[in-house]
Length: 233
Image 1: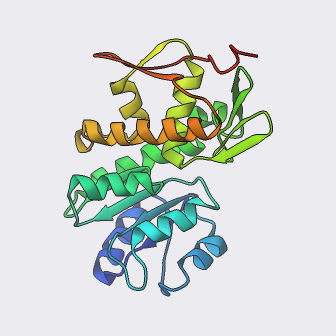
Image 2 (image 1 turned 30 degrees about the horizontal axis):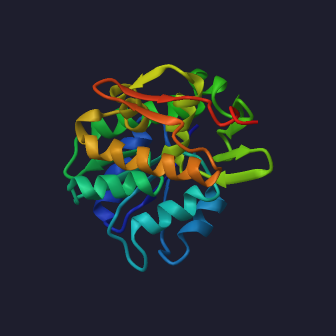
């Protein structure tokens, strides 16, 4: 049975969420001490987190970062804040999806099931606990890390998804639509600026490993990772 942790301060909404989730066979628990969200997460060990933005003490972005530092479990934001910047912020801090209030409970269940299939289903077996290496550059998907020679850097959850796709198709063009699909299931919530933000972040991460100009923009098509970092050796 999948366990879902609900980090929300609206008790009526928690009751309704738990009612629907329990009906579909999920085990649920809600946070009762908003100063100890990470502690409760570690104790409960959920398979997925539902997280609000506006919370007592610290906001949802803070707790998303805290959870993401110790886990790669799916995190879905549920919030009344519906601006694109809020959604970009959620992604930048490690979220997997963003659902705006008011919402249809069937949509919430569908998105939860989609994330659980990706993280724990048969589709995930080939992705979790693996590494990808191109010309000495190694991506550890589970550890959210990228290394070259004796240097290693940390990536966010979303940066890892993008780098993974680019490395798997090194020297080939990966379309913007494909990368948006990797970032978020529902592309209707994501504008082009979201992807631009992440491509810039990935370029900076590559630069910190002294990989310059390897991530190319192919106008009108997408992006291509060219493994040219060994050419001068």
